[in-house]
Image 1 (cartoon, rainbow, N blue to C red):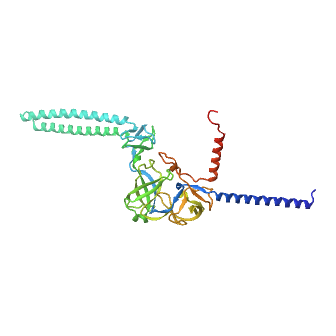
Image 2 (image 1 turned 180 degrees about the vertical axis):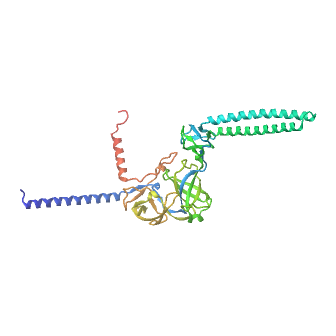
Length: 410
């Protein structure tokens, strides 16, 4: 069993060793930090953003969805059974393409009956006309009475009326027969199929919906207290859910004169100004109507660092890297840049895409961009910030590889 004095001595030696190890570790970290600060950070002009005054658009916010201007909700005009649905959701159609075929058995029977009635009425009218002409000739020679002539004329007129009615029923039956074939009213896409083969289609029942994807527009809602600031032709910048950070632009096409009775919001129609608008309807969209603009300092969203409610940026000045605190304001919906209210001045340069290895007070050395050294047809992307340590390691590895590779032919 160890004596108490030996135990105390052992604990003292262990604590001394731990403190010495921690001290050595701290000194090693400080030495590494000092060494890193001595190595310059290699950057190109493409790695930096020049802070300068830019136009910041302002105006009321508008929210809504992307909807087609040309759309058709095709409904049944007959009470019959659906025989066939020829198009599915998402399929493109041309004007006049057959979409749905309805049962036409009873309508064809009605059409045949009407046509036969019209044919019989035509024969009756022909006979009545011959009888009337015959009695008219006899009456002129005094061989028949006026009463018989008037009776023949009446029969001729009644037969003529029956023929007109029979032909009208025939036309109506033919129109009903045409309604059993539901066709596309314009070039577009089937957006929604409502029925399947075997369903009973009542009068007014929805069958299919067809939209024109080239006629998309932004149907947004605006707060009623902002209506006075909106005018037709004003530019609108907005984003569409499902298209990431891609921005779209448009112009105010129409402002409704009546507010919604429930929300008290006013609908605003925005026509796309882009050459390639979204082709999917119903997507949520949000943007801002540009009723005015001001000149202010702007910074790219990629150059901002967030830490809770605080914002920072890495500024490059006099060959040194400095982490500065910023006060940012509104975000420009067109480009996604932020307003700089404090922390930077006009002409400052900041790192466009900062990395986690940057250190406050580190030296900065400007180098030529890759695009200026490599004469290619298309300019490459901006070179990233170069870490000197990784660059030296890569050079040493390349040199070792060259030395270990034997010359050709040996």
